[in-house]
Length: 87
Image (cartoon, one colour):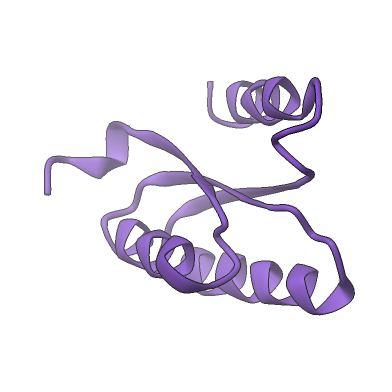
């Protein structure tokens, strides 16, 4: 993997499955991560928060965002959050 420390990565579906596995892998490489999930229920939110906590424990800079990316403006807000947090 290339030097991930200079990368900002937005991972959708980061609360479980492939998204969570990718987040963990990139956290070990110290990437800056914006972890995203729809957050439809409390269990889904809890899973995303647990992945974020793990990634931080690995030394990654992490922000989280919730929302349905199919809805107008949700993707733009996620990108704005990443820009504000990571430059």
